[in-house]
Structures are given as C-alpha cells and as structure tokens.
Image 1 (cartoon, rainbow, N blue to C red):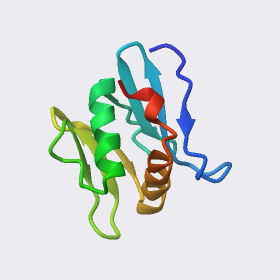
Image 2: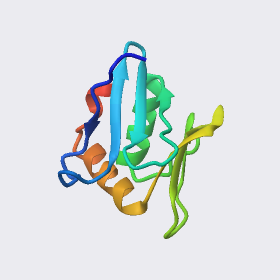
Image 3: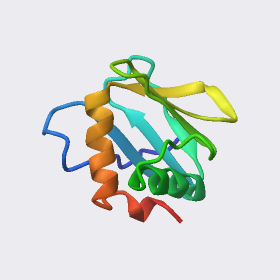
Length: 112
C-alpha cells in the first residue's frame, strides 16, 4: 500500500493516540495508532459515509457494512461485517474523540 496521509480529529490531543482516517482511490482506511494489532480497516467511501451518518445521528452503526461493538467500559471494536477478523480496537475515550470529529464534519470529505 502506498504511503497514506492519515488524519485524526482536531479533538484528539497532540501526541495522543487516536482513530485515524486516510483515503486511496476508491477506499477509506481506519486505524488506531496505539492498536497493538496494527489493523487497518478498509471500506468503500459509500460505506464510510454510512458510518458517518449513523454516528452523526447517534445511532449504532451496525445495520450497514461496518459494525461498532462498544460494550460499556470495554474496548471499542470496529470491523466490516464481511471481514470481522480485521478489527480496529480503541478505548471509549478515543472513540468518543473520533465521534466528536465526525459530528464536526471533519471527515466528510472521505465519504462519497
């Protein structure tokens, strides 16, 4: 994969690990900089747009192609329903920081 230009939410403190988003032609990639597995979730811009819509409307994004498992106080796990073995993991604080950026439209340009 070519060098990706990762973007994190402006709500993420400088130096803190956070959920990051990057794009290549026809794909959007998500990762978490401190995820020990180093997983990168790759979805289409349309699927990423559906995730953004769900997060902005405060609904659980599980009916689309991306599922977010977020048990109270536990690890947040984001994966594609077609490839559940590839999951980006983060904690609730970092996920909420990402969601704040989503609601501020910081990642809209990645969606189709």
